[in-house]
Length: 52
Image (cartoon, rainbow, N blue to C red; front, side, top):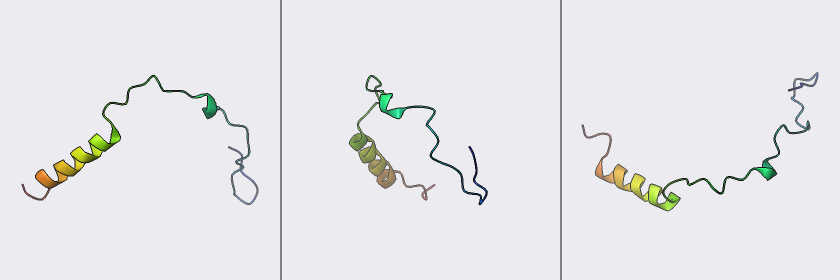
């Protein structure tokens, strides 16, 4: 990364990777986000960290 004389990095260089072409639709990420959030809430209520 190039740096200007005043110490600010130059950010208008061409990107190394074109993320518009990135496609990961084939990848299964597991459970839906709402399910994971619900599980986190249940864990925090049923198994609080302070009660050892």
